[in-house]
Figure 1: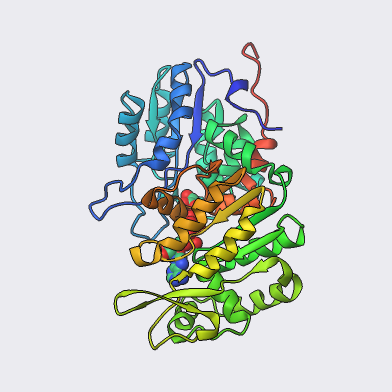
Figure 2: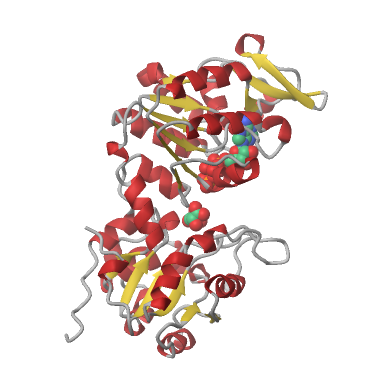
Length: 407
Ligand SMILES: Nc1ncnc2c1ncn2[C@@H]1O[C@H](COP(=O)(O)OP(=O)(O)OP(=O)(O)O)[C@@H](O)[C@H]1O
Ligand SMILES: O=C(O)[C@H](O)COP(=O)(O)O
């Protein structure tokens, strides 16, 4: 059982709030999209309105990557979104950071520096070991409670996610609560249940496919995107050099054998594209499987219209549809129709759940609305959709309770 903000005695309490505001960053270092910040406004504004002293913890990017930047722009944007000053301190657990946290008054909010500026925060630990890290040891003395609202990072066993709730009373924030409500009860969603696995993260999708088919969670798995292309090759289809080279260059060649094993074991529940779209003379050109391979340099960039008809027929009987990853290169208008139509058809079903960063941006770009739930998480949502526990959620379940006010 996880405690929520309803269980937290907030007034005068110094709360470390882990959020996931990991966002695309423009070349000049500014935020390119604030969707993930907006998602946490409910949690943060509730805590400040209830008189909490709020210290925000978050990561941004990965070490060595272009988006590995400070959280100063995030603090500025949060200040606008919360309608109150939000301080930023360029440290996470040093004396300066601790001082900033100690100086908070009721209703104040400060953003601490990108947790991944410290190497421990980019490692994975068991919770007890994570509790011994410098970040946790440094912050524990200045915090009374810990709130985790970072559902999108809950598949990571990093100190700010699993160490802090080992030593501090832990609570789910409002984003975490609503994600767990929907995605945590996937086994209880109505059947038939159809999973649509598209996008480009082939190993993750194949892991998910194994898990949901083995557990009997999926009545059908529809494949699309690069995932669909890998399954077609595994089924003996010659997709041509351009698609094969792309898969090879991504390091996904071994996934073809795993896809073939899946087809041997569960082929009756896995649907493969019946046609694909390639670029020919600067336009979209569709080819049935029997007309493959395509011409030189032509890659399969989207599912074609007979695949769409076939998949829509399967979706028409689904009570629950779960989607991850676009059906094609939706960024190019010649190849957006597969994603637009497939995702549009899913929204007609009684329960439709979608997750993934690129998927969410595809939905925004294509103006597809009407899902029962759009998850903030990519990898975290995928892991939950296989009914696997998330380390940060388990850590919250095991967190100590808040002592009574007069203790
Ligand atoms: N047939 C295809 N060939 C090449 N790229 C494709 C194809 N189909 C989809 N893609 C690409 O896949 C990318 C998105 O895949 P990804 O698996 O990263 O999505 P996501 O799960 O929503 O994102 P994340 O897991 O990062 O939150 C898009 O950039 C899209 O252009
Ligand atoms: O964007 C995400 O999926 C989360 O913020 C986790 O980021 P990570 O994959 O770099 O751990």
